[in-house]
Length: 252
Picture 1 (cartoon, rainbow, N blue to C red):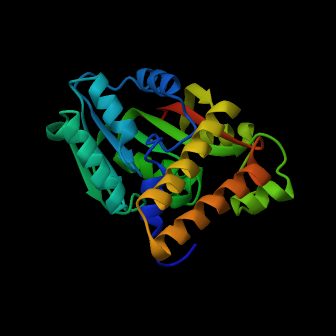
Picture 2 (cartoon, rainbow, N blue to C red; picture 1 turned 135 degrees about the vertical axis):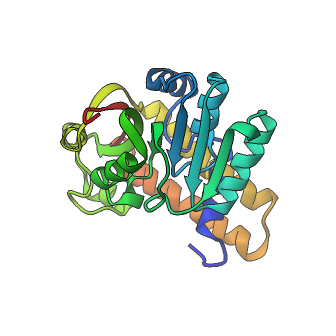
């Protein structure tokens, strides 16, 4: 990607149409948050919160909750604060610009961590970080990728991954259990959810490039959208899966 376009800006723009920032539909999101079921007046943490879609949706559904979202991206956090204000949630949520891998706080009754295990070096590192902020016996909503099939050389190249970097689904669940968590309810993203997410990602970035950006930014954004589209369609489409699971802390 051209260095004139910051990666945080690319991500914030690309997720305008799909702020959940994961291949998860609105219906599946609602079910997952319902199954997470934090206590009525509990505290919830979202590590790697992005624009705050998961956390804000949970707070809107359960008026007694308060929450904290942590992310390094200033553009995403600005969007999260705007959404909190528009939803009347500003007094119940705090968004902190910090490295989710080293930030510590709590204890929280539930921790949300969706699609950011790379920040922590994988699922085990993610769950170690989560446990630092989770009260004993609390619950986690974890979203992570796995290989549905393959992976083929094209899928590895499209994702920029090495063989063995991601597990298959049984391997991912086994890693979760080794870390002292028991999977409860879960959702496996469908191909339709993946396609919606990817078309929104590339489409929002393309629209921004053609209607708002100019010069070097326009060229860089179009290049980023085209590259991502090619990596998805010619690479990992149909091979990369996504699990979102409610995990119970068994060490409480």
